[in-house]
Length: 144
Length: 146
Image 1 (cartoon, rainbow over the protein chains, first blue to last red):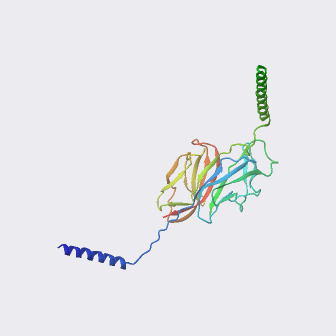
Image 2 (tube, rainbow over the protein chains, first blue to last red):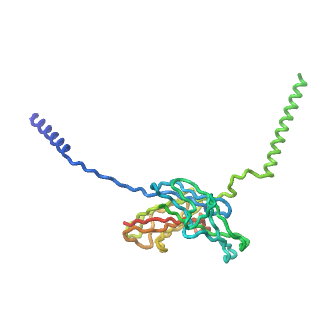
Image 3 (cartoon, each protein chain N blue to C red):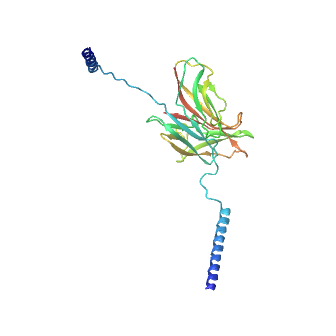
């Protein structure tokens, strides 16, 4: 009986080894694409003539991609005096190198964490009415 | 010997008086001429906004999982909106710093497909129904509906 058991176990091991030896190898690839992610930091309010910053942090984007921050489809924004909204002022945004952001030139670009300085400037104040002017900037952000 | 000690004491007292006078002169001068400017004239407050380049939704349902958070380091609330071709699919109330959205209800369902959306983040005052409106960001994002 013991001999029969030994023979049975041995033959099972041999069969198993043979199966492993003859087994076809299949390869499988697991694919996962992590989405681009980052934080953009913008000033709550911008004072004309004073420097402000746009910052990109925790930037995790694919190689070759760039984060662009622009003014969208406009070259400047308009700010209004609440007492008289008929004479808005045009506000442009100048980058550190002195160039102005426009529809074809983004205000800031990033491919990693960083900060870019800019200054809001008003071209012509000849028609300005005394008092406080205000307006809102909606920055447009692309990652391409 | 005793006289020497007196001279040393007088000299020490004179030195202390001179030091005090020098400090007073520097203090007075700094009050008159201001402090060193560090390049920033006012404390500009900044808003940190999380990006979404891809959003994943389920087809044919208005209720969607969507995790958006307003970092607790911010001083202002945020309102978000999802807009496609001028049509608003979702608009939130003001989300205070440290708070998040986990589920949203769209105004209409989406069919399967990939859509280009503008994900708008508008910053506003911290109090509910606050009137202050700060700057904001329009993110170009792709919504994948499966």
